[in-house]
Length: 370
Image: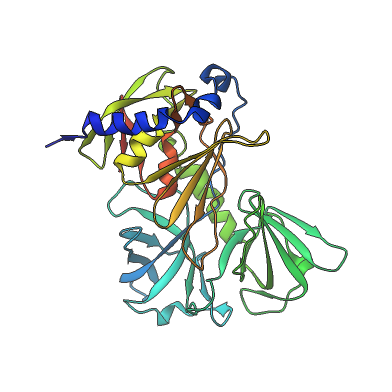
């Protein structure tokens, strides 16, 4: 049975926003937003999953072919293991023997951003990270997008879709996955590395430093490229891409909550009134007026993660709130910049909720957020 959120509740939320005169003053004209240059969205190179091993699939030879994982935050997930999957002992900073993996072990898995629509979803695993000490962060799987050799002998790697500059010290330990000694001169654009670091400066791009780097086999990025190129469904990047601009969308949350407000398609993006949707899903929404020429900021957050919406800026970014953890998503362009309509309703692409772990789909004229 469908349950309808009280219109009074949503109206009250919108009325609260209306009493903020600064919001009206900062409102952006949607017509102007339509003419903004739309950048091509870049799919992330990999995604990170953390959970416990529930089942280990093996072939007749005993080789691991799949892992069924479970996580309180991410739910169940099947990671498909291939010969290109790398196994990392994060504590020892070496390759790990997959034959020693046990049911119940906690692992970090870097996997393809492309997944099946099955339940649980399935995705190719690029790196399985084990033996992570409690007092340090896990090794990170990164694509080398650019390399700058610095005068002091260090090197700076650009990664995370340009969102992170990682400086590798001149005297850093650099090894191959096979355990052989390597050097910073061996870094190649398009290759992958495992890097050990904890602190990231929350600038943009973020900045971090490492004293240990492991170079990955070249097959890892070849597998990644083939998978993303041949398997990516259209819905992954643009759930409303086939609908005409101006199409009105009914909004259904968590399968059976029908909102009394509607979304709409603009510039190919499924747009929603942020406060109405976010508050119905249990998130906190905060508005900060712009100062000194800066854009106004609207944030959507839960206890562990915050999504930043800079009004008039196509790029949307998420930042962790977990104490002791440092991290952010790559800035994502969902095809339309957030804007404000008087008396104070913020509109933004529905896909912003994917950064908070939700699934956003459009079926006909129905927008669903799970």
